[in-house]
Length: 148
Image (tube, rainbow, N blue to C red; front, side, top):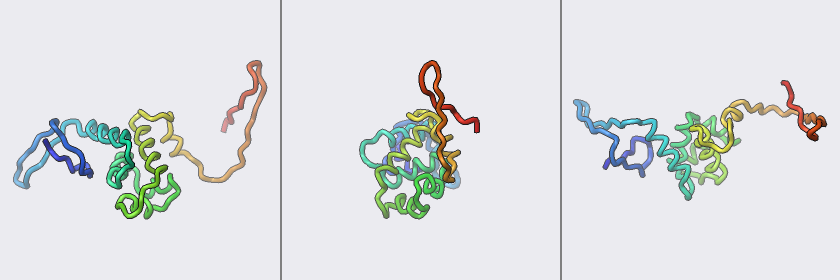
C-alpha cells in the first residue's frame, strides 16, 4: 500500500498500479496510467457527500487547468478569496463547492449540462438587451434563433 500524497491530497492510498524506484537522487514512484488515476480521484471527490476540503477544492481546480484568477472570474469573487478557500482560511460556499464538482464532471464528459465549459468560456460579460424573436408555425409558437 502506498500513501499517495503526490496528488496534493492526504487521503489517497494506492493498493497497486505503481512501482517504487531507487536512484542516486533517492526513492521515487512511477504510477501506471496516471491520467486514469486522477480521473478516479476526481470522480471520488465529486461523489462524496460531505463538503470538499480546501485541498480537494484545489485538486479539482488544478485538474480543470484553471488558475485561481479564472475560477474567481467564473464565481465573481477575487483570486484572493479563492486562495483563502484553498488555504482553509475561509469556508468554501456550498454553491462554489457544487460548481467546481459540476465543472469537473463536465470536463471529463460525464456532466449533466452538455457543453457547459464551452458556454462558460464564451460568455460575453457585457450587458446587452435581450431580444426574443418568436414566430408562429404549424406546430405552434417557436423561438427564432438569432443568426449572430
